[in-house]
Length: 287
Image (cartoon, helix red, strand yellow):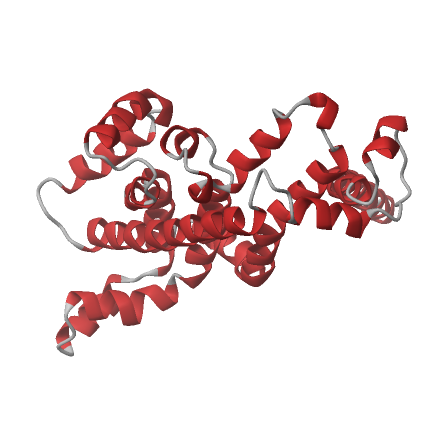
């Protein structure tokens, strides 16, 4: 009887694993298919794209690359540089100051500690679009339009990133370590920068990726603040290509531009990918 139950249990386990792997493979193919089609479409001309769907690449890749890179209406290299500058500064400021805030609330015991924590969580529930009108009006009054500061500095206040960092610190940072550093004469910033931050590398890597991608794809606020051609970011330029005259619309060039636009995101992801799974797993477990 025990042998039959063991055999049945093994069969059920094998079936469960097979189903799980099949679902994961299907989802992976589904996710990668859009990237595959983007690459395929970037190798086809406008006429070939209008002719219909195909899974095979064509020989128009370098023609589309040249047309997109040298387009007179948009400056792709400058747009990518602008987007990278904003996204890189945003990701660094977001992760560092969110980690610093999380460290302060996690380590220090002050009267308004719980109030500060719940207040930040309450701010997290407010959609950015609610305050967008007032923010844009303020930037116009301060004459900060066509300036990258309004797109970078507000990233210091990131409640979602703060909450993640706070949960991560609770799982990996024992108070004894901080107290030992204090007893050795280390000041708070030295303790944070030299002891706490290295412990938080997986969490920092995860949030830097998320912040970079979010800033790189941000269209709403930059479109309202940037109107000079040399200041525009990649999402604004893609929108300009889509709104062009249909008779002059080159779909191959658009697909190539989109492919170029996602390359920096993929590069950042590849560089920091080793820390993603570790950071997500550790940050989701409260010790």
